[in-house]
Image 1 (cartoon, rainbow, N blue to C red):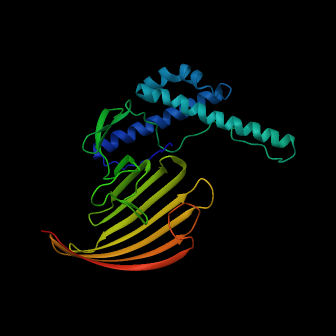
Image 2: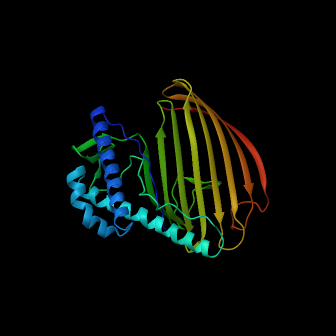
Image 3: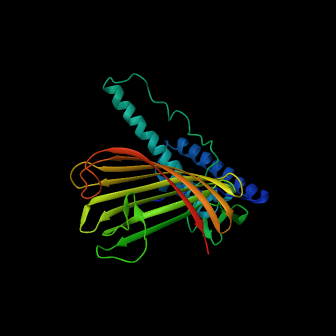
Length: 304
């Protein structure tokens, strides 16, 4: 089982750091357009190695790009021309077969790059630093820029069939203290402000000894602090029990909670949960019929 996690992180550069990053972006874009014009003037070539061989030194000298970026430019331009040539060939075939009369004009002019974006290579052009910082290469040298407050975590979890322990070690939907499972998962938390934050979690498990049976478990929620003592929580949870044969059992939960802190040690909460269950063929999950319903819970907590 393969799991890919993609994170979009926001940078918080100073004014001078922003200027250095912007200068690098614009130089990279100018280099792309320079190589694009060269390719167009030399038979609209898409061979990345040939473009790098002919343009690398000029990219370094004229635009001042570091070595790795100077390699990325002809690769990106070559990939662009390769894609355009593919469209030209498809269009020619469609015209011969009478499926269209229009001629594709994507290679009538050199492709022009407008967006000031560039490709960085990990461990070459940028590296992650402690304390939520990233070191980024620019034309003026490296700058260390703080990242946004996005928190990401990943994990592998295995609970054997004979595992047992006092207390609570988690739940998957209606299944408390699950056993005989293994799989991968991840979680995120992003505070939009001091009072509003987004949380999410996703896990994909397999049954040990019966790996064609999978469990997909996802949760997401918003936590909003109305005041320093009052808060509102909104959440959703879905569990899909996917058997090797037959239909999928599905559990969905929608939650709203109100909380009040009397002091650091005493709090009161009210929770309402709406439940939507759809029966399937997964063994020993729930009843063999669909149902919906709701439940309200209150909680008074005192810490000693």
